[in-house]
Figure 1 (spheres, helix red, strand yellow):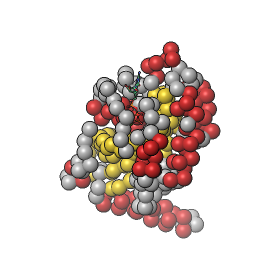
Figure 2 (cartoon, rainbow, N blue to C red; figure 1 turned 90 degrees about the horizontal axis):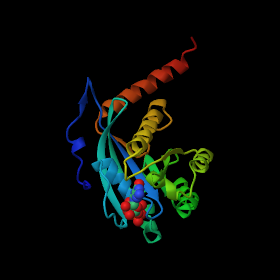
Figure 3 (cartoon, helix red, strand yellow; figure 1 turned 30 degrees about the vertical axis):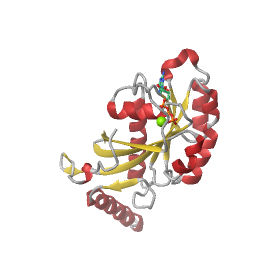
Length: 229
Ligand SMILES: Nc1nc2c(ncn2[C@@H]2O[C@H](COP(=O)(O)OP(=O)(O)OP(=O)(O)O)[C@@H](O)[C@H]2O)c(=O)[nH]1
Ligand SMILES: [Mg+2]
């Protein structure tokens, strides 16, 4: 896993076709202890299962550069401890996140029942525009399942969350979970629903190019609105 000083993306522009994209998006991984948050992050970054994963102490950090709809995006991911005793530390990371993976373990009803509390925390502490994906992890342990796909997908729908079942062990849907969240965030920026310039949006542009494009689009839209033709 990379450390916090790894900000090389912002030293050099990344050129794709004729455009430069350097967007940083901050993600959180939250949920009860033992649900597989650290293993999910490890699978996403290293594309392998993390053997002998220990409880996270406080917060750990990882990052990966991905391509989302032709845009190069750096995901800066905070893997938080699920244990109650770290809750005051982890709560300080909610503000300033653009996306969150809310993880439960499909073989543990207790971790599923705790989701309401995790959501209350997130809705209270994070930006109102945070994009949340619910991840039912340990999909590979279907024989020990305590939470059905159907009830979790209903919960997700009722709470306006995206939803996937994942396996940090096999890698199933792990990349999809992160990319789906990143794609939704970028779509919200494009549609104007999410303002990256707003404090605590969890988005940063590495250079001015995208900001200028957005401002230009914004003023074009304004001009159109003022025009009665
Ligand atoms: N079978 C299976 N086991 C998993 C999976 N993901 C994680 N585990 C196991 O679940 C246990 C907990 O995984 P962690 O990733 O450390 O859990 P965590 O959510 O980070 O826990 P905290 O850091 O305490 O909050 C470990 O024994 C992992 O090997 C999975 O997808 N399938
Ligand atoms: Mg952990």
